[in-house]
Length: 146
Image 1 (tube, rainbow, N blue to C red):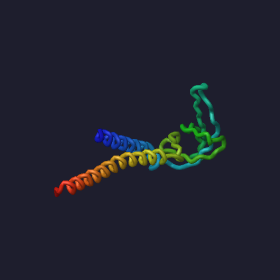
Image 2: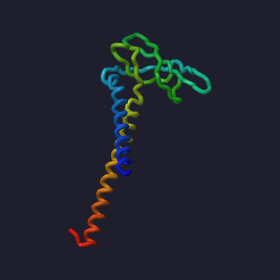
Image 3: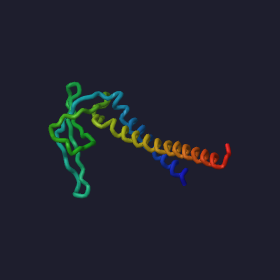
Image 4: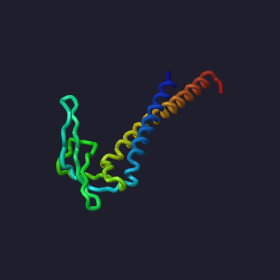
């Protein structure tokens, strides 16, 4: 049972690290090739019914003298009309955008939990090994075996 517990703990940690790498790679293209620019929130639209409300954030930004309108894809209750946001825009398609504010938060959280769970499994193995060595030593001292 103990081995199953350690395996599950380590597997859970590996899954968290896998998702950290996955989410980090989602943003990688925008971090490498994307141009940073400022966007202004022009409208926040509420869609849906009481059970399923969706907020759509409309933004406007300028690239090389041209003004583009787009939707952000994320919403926070702290957003307001007129707010200036930092976005990344792909140079080959100015309608491909990415909100740059939280791009490192999600991978960092997943890495933290991955290391926490894997570290917990390793720590359990180390502590169990120390306890077994102490038990063997006490047994051999008690019964005169070396």
